[in-house]
Every structure is written in C-alpha cells, then in structure tokens.
Length: 201
Image 1 (cartoon, helix red, strand yellow):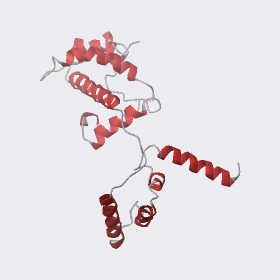
Image 2 (tube, rainbow, N blue to C red; image 1 turned 180 degrees about the vertical axis):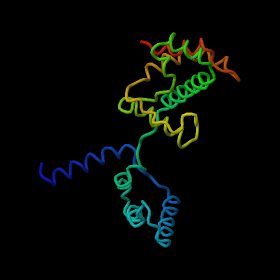
Image 3 (cartoon, rainbow, N blue to C red; image 1 turned 60 degrees about the vertical axis):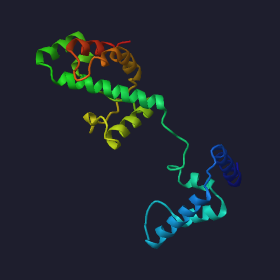
Image 4 (spheres, rainbow, N blue to C red; image 1 turned 180 degrees about the horizontal axis):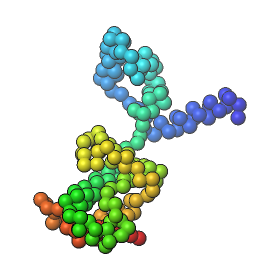
C-alpha cells in the first residue's frame, strides 16, 4: 500500500487493540494528573514522562494516545494467576530439594547420583525455558529479584534454555503429599530420589 494507506491501517489496528479497554479518567484523576504535570514542569524534571504531552491528551481527550506513547505502562497484560501459583510451587519445591541435598553426606549424594541418574548428578534448580516458558521465567525473576521472595535462588540466570515445566509438574504431583510432612523438617534422601526420578517421562 501507499505510505498514507499504511499509516491509516496502522491507526485502525492500534484503535482496535485499545478500543475494548478504553482508558477513562474521573474528573478528580484529571485534576491530579494536571497538577502533577505542573509540578513536573516547575521542577524541570527530565524523566521518561512528557508533561506537555499528558496535558495535550487531557485537554483533547486523546486518551488512546497514552496507550500508544507509553505502551509499557498502559497495556492490558496481567500475569495469569494459575501460572503465578505454579511458579511459586516450583520454587518452593526446589528450595526444599536443594536445601536438603546441601546437608547430605557425600555418601548420600553418591547414592542419589546413582539411584536418580542422570538427574542426581546435578541437583539444582535449572529454571524455565526462556523461549518456551517466558511467562514462568519472568514471574520467577520478579518474585526473586523484586519481591525478595525465594532469595535462595538470587543471582542465578534461571534460563534453562529448554522447556522443563512438564517435568516440574510431574515432580509436584509427587511433592504435594510430601509437603504436608515437611513443617519444620526437610526431605529425606529417599524423597529426593523420588522427586528427581519423577522428571522422567
């Protein structure tokens, strides 16, 4: 298409994605935003928000423009609650596994390496596949680095570069009955072997 037609199509596409969840501001919110823009300009803050643009949006009613200019703020994405719960359960399970494994004797670790081969040779949380499980990976990073939860895994890359959720789901089926008995305790060598072997298809 011509350039003008291409621009028209882009505008139509943009409006179609923002039309279902149209931004709305109450009169109070408009007043607050206007006052903040005035403060922003008065203090000569050089940040990522353009106060003049915000005022133009408010005066002209071009609220859709906020979604276009600041797509990182005004978007419709929200983490799936089921996925968040799944990530929390996986991190919790692996924290139990690794903390228990670290306390074992060399003899017990050798036993795990033999009975849970090949998974028993490197007993550590590998993370989630960046290309296949990006939502899980991002949630895990947020929990660990921003919410300071599961700090046991802080500093790790957590990108396994391969999908592992199906393995973790099989492990969780074995772990859930165990969890009820772990209050104030830790996993036994036998339980670690069972969990690691659950990774097998």
